[in-house]
Image (cartoon, rainbow, N blue to C red; front, side, top):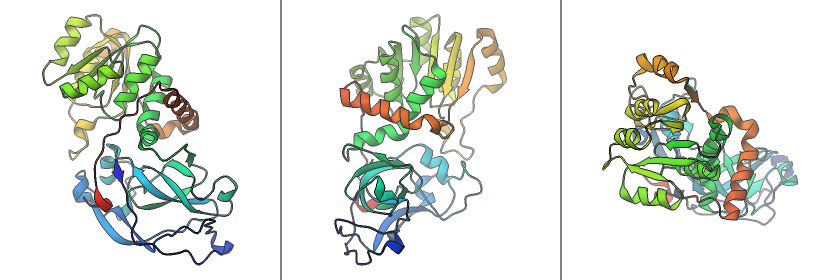
Length: 342
């Protein structure tokens, strides 16, 4: 997470409806702001981005909100975006960052029918790595307050919820393996699988993370630095696992394929181990994959959140409900950055 601070402020003078720039409480908004901009395509994020300190604060259009970002989410997908893998037609310079939460500080006339200045909102849209972001009101999500825990749901939480709901076919007693289980989206996959009354195995990289997984209900955490994952799965789960929630790729992907039970389902939501490589991929044993799937009547299913936006709002509402009831832990991993400085 990044915590953002504002630059020197100015008072809003031009309140004309023609510019659709309404600030009912007279908030002080600076003339300029800081933001990260992708200035060259590279899988090395630090090489790809430049911190620009004197960017004009944008004005919202008629149906827009101007959001002062208080927290923004850092995702593995940011590396793919800065490398130009999602949209090859996109050329630098361009804005970066996918999700943010903050307060509305100004808004357009049409947007004022649903939102007010000072209201807490979250959003998922390009350009969040900035002190202020213009967000279409149609995609903004009203929030009870500005809490970083809500931010974890926007991409990580909805990815886990929708992929397991649409592709996982979870039911009581099923065995679910979650790789990188203590990570941003893995923590949600663990908890949602437990809510579905499944038996959950989670891989992680430290005893501290294993303890965290235990605390959120994971039945069998595996610290792969002290226990060979393949050995544990073969000895303790000889009949295999029914569902794999896989985000690592490479050798872990190969291991997950081998661990599938008959009619098992492997859901690929990413392959983070290769994101910083030139190709974005870690090698896998693709040549034997069809044979392995065939022998088990198993399936390999990909999930990309952008293809499920029609069900996004309902997923967010469900996650917020679970969090409000105390049935969902949203662990926040903090990265302290002063004024967006890297």
